[in-house]
Length: 509
Image (cartoon, rainbow, N blue to C red):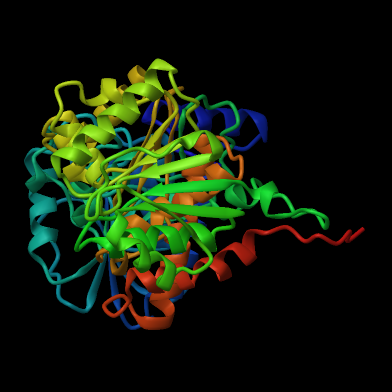
């Protein structure tokens, strides 16, 4: 798993790498510059004019080394050092001397260079060590670049952006990059919506930094992480070996949510799936998903009474259930019996209207049984936890509530975050904007409850479910395009996604 480190942890990893390999600090900088230069050479045409804005610290040293390497590749390179009167770091001083040796002109004061749409700015003014908002000439440089038509590539992190909390950081003092080339692991601030206009598209470049001594509990999921969770199916297995999921979903006019959750659950490998739906709506399931069993509620239009869940290995509650008073009472009753241990409770996923009903109760999170999984989008989460001013503040609440109530909170978004009761957080990078369509969340619920039914631990089921959901969405976008794809298309791509994750049954020697 890719750890997401704090600025201090990154500096410690730098020092550990220099000591352990061993490697000089200037050599580590050269590795970073080489990785950036390779990326730039693969994405920027030789006829574009490059302007490197470098600062006095090691981020500036990275920029100077990149300038030298791009010059060697015959790019038209200008170098500008806007911040004067500040001592340079040792590595930056060495790289500045190298530029002078090859007679690459460096402007250390004076007016800002002209920037047109033909220019590409390499932003290397400030890196991860920044702890206060930019002012003075640095802020002026940021404002100048922001108003220019030039494309911007940030080195490690956009100048002015803090690694973690930007709640009190004035947005106007942060550079807006089109691309950010970050070293070894993403920075925490990259995962929050309010910072996306600063980072642009970001890519992690491997520079050989040793991070095994880091103790961060924040991670970004990878395909290898998810693949390692799967085991091959046994030859003599049967449907009973892969669990029985119960999905309490649907109401008059909202049966599509139930159908999507049930079909996603079936496609994700559960041995048996039962849909508990209103009496008059059972045909919606039987016609749309004939592989599923149906448990009919006594009420013709809404969920009014909880089924006996002792025969199921996992349950999901919420997609399309509505907010009828009878449904509210049924949900309250089943959650209280779960918490009081009055009824054998399988692991559960709560989503959609189940969360909205809980948010309207006085008890809110106290209603939830330990180790249950909830999957709110930001507005649903704010209804539960109170309004947050930005994504970072919402994330802090997510972590605290997951620990306090011993639950797993899947906060959905561009980088869905799974917070576990032990304080660990897992960010997911699969998925795309085409998944912002009705029913997508119901599909996620179906995938997660399917994994729970098959015996997966709740945190692993949540992480794998989120990754699979996003990866299937990416395949769907490739096939249909982001604008045209639907939640049903995501379900159809679950199979191809799982094929890539399923280990081979054969011994390969």
